[in-house]
Image 1 (cartoon, helix red, strand yellow):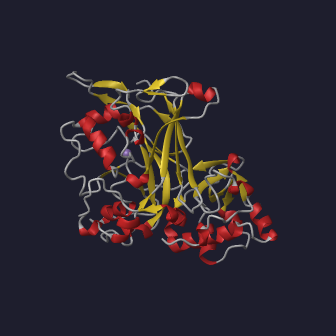
Image 2 (cartoon, protein in one colour):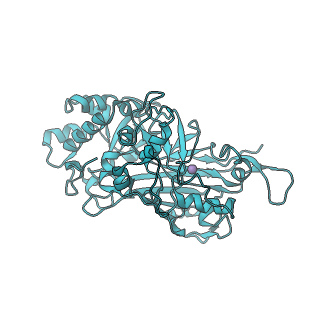
Image 3 (cartoon, rainbow, N blue to C red):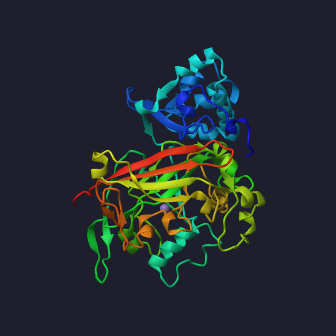
Length: 441
Ligand code: MN
């Protein structure tokens, strides 16, 4: 993906809030979401594009006569409760819509055009969001070698990194029914655990509730069953990227995970940000793959020069906790960790290609989780279990309270953004949720 005039860091919008320093949504970003005005009837969802503190209603824009061709077709496809119809149109349509919307929102758009587009804007504060996609299948990968090693040390001190890790992009099939959009509460799960030294499992509320800082890669166009996606074309199939929190019940996981991997420790909830940032918007933040072990002999189907040179993305991520008391006192979430997607061992193109190499078909709206994106340093841990070294070293929050794992009433807030020399800063917004107590059973 090459840079073009929509990446020009000097471009400004006539929407004033899009030009404010530190905004997640300058004119260079233009991410997609599904929303409805709070005042609109239930289920009156439609697709929109963020600009500053506003959201541009795409089906409304489609009726103004300001769009033509593929861009018009894409905006019309936004009259739905999910982005799937836009995703299915393919990269040329996403590109056409981005470029058309960029021109309409730029500060040199004609006054009459600005007035027409203004009628299609809603303040983000006055809307509610739906999940961005109707996710048919959700797969969670394990692409951070730092996370794999940190977790491996806790579960298998003598054998932290299993020998397949540097050859196979490891993943498991997740559960799409419990995906929720940011702002939805998450219920603490009940389940079986095996307490240390016990001979029979206990049952009850999870005691080691954790988050995982991840990105969600949303598939645009799929592939035919039986026909793999080669690595040179893999990114053509990706619509964009959102924030993803893979809630994890560590005590349930430790007991159930052998030999088939995560099950009830993961499928009670996964939170996604409403905003999906397109690959075109992310073009200025590409970077070379990082391999701390210096191993570059991937099997040929996973090897590609362009992927190695610029298949990684420097998406910075932070996670914080706001306790109930902090929220009542108006205190912001206390950031406890910051990391970047650039540290992933396997790239998004490798995830797509590996997933389909056996002929498995991806479909529009499918979700590929990156796996917990821990970086090489301890403060870059993507989960509490790593940050607290298995619950041994508590973190202290701004209100003086301490946490090893999450307590009921805690709100977890994840943010993502990109910065690079010569590029406008863009952001992913937030992915947040409050923990509710377990149901008594
Ligand atoms: Mn995960």
